[in-house]
Image (cartoon, rainbow, N blue to C red; front, side, top):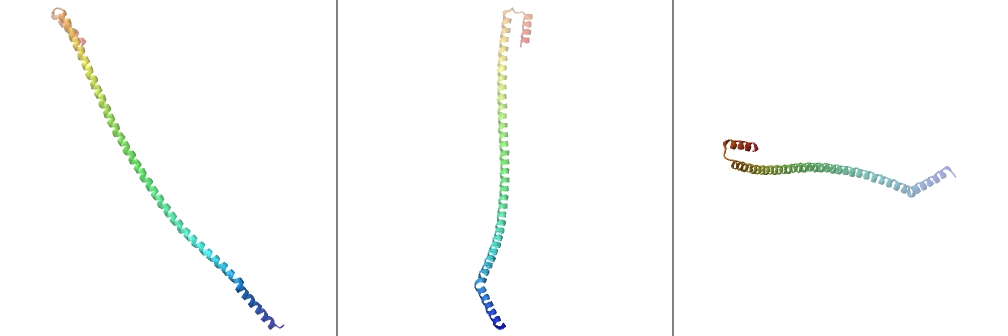
Length: 156
């Protein structure tokens, strides 16, 4: 065979090889590359979406933390106000109770004072009667009467 025949046969074999490659080999490779590119694009889009979701979640968490802090501050202030009002109420009740106790003590002291005066009056009356009996039993004598009245004064 000549060089022209060999060259023609090699060209035909090459063309058959190109046709075979284009028909059977190239489409699966292109499909695999397209699929891989699609997966990469989906992955990048999922990553972007995840970043956006993370940013949104971080923002939501920050808002919730802020709300929780505000709520805690409000509750603490309410608790302090309640404690203060309870303390003031307890002070008021204690002062009322102290006033009642003082009033009761004064009333008792007044009653005791009245009882003591009554007892003293009874004793004075008894001494006066005793002195009068002593005077009436003796004969009427000014020096004896003065002496008896002096003793009566010392007894009172």
